[in-house]
Length: 189
Image (tube, rainbow, N blue to C red; front, side, top):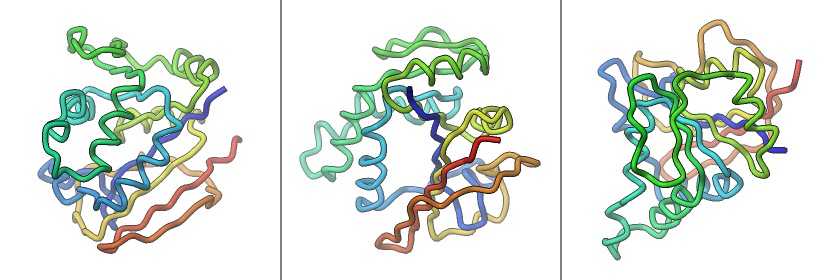
């Protein structure tokens, strides 16, 4: 049985995207990228909304493969990403050409719970909107904030309004450049 995990690169003031929709400020250092890679090795399936899918599918044919000067962490993440199953929740997306990828027309929380129960590895849910539904339903076992030293001043919050939980800190780590990883278990109610 897997665990459902939600992790995001976030600004110090808690946003996944700023008011303009940008997240250019959220690019991880190679050191932070390596830490994320370590954690993503346990993931067998990534669940994305359409917006995050459009960003993440870059890793399918990542130019890092053709750039020997690219950081080893980039090559490693591309391989991890390609080796995992992907579920994209979208009402408008045609079936993607990428291998190991399926489209769900909506986020069926019972179906998501079954996917996690049946998964031999962890399942990662990405994107604040999609993850918000799973958080409110009590399906998420872990949240991880990869906090970068940037104040967005507004935008798309990484956690949903009205969601409350007493989290249990499992891991914390500081990185070059001022980023901090905070990994919490979400106790079951």
